[in-house]
Length: 117
Ligand code: FES
Image 1: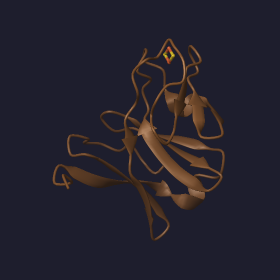
Image 2: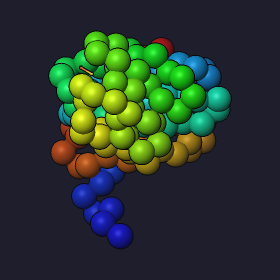
Image 3: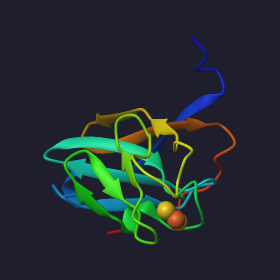
Image 4: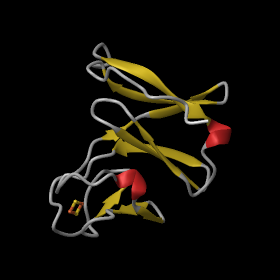
């Protein structure tokens, strides 16, 4: 277990992320959190091809399509399905604690903008 350099960051209340919605956590690096049919999933927000924000992409099943060049990333594995992106994004562990969504990230993440509400 190598969780000593990890920490849990508060994202937002579960009620603020309805099914089918996504939120961008303004951390370093930013993280995209999705609610897919009640399942909360988190990946790096920045596409591995260029600088697109994946939280602004289109979700289909457990894939999110990059809004710039249409590579689709699997929200559970981080793997892209087709070029131009070839590198996976990181997948982050998520928990819901007392109605609050939390994401496990590396300790270097140092800021969160807000709960968005
Ligand atoms: S920026 Fe995402 S596929 Fe190009």
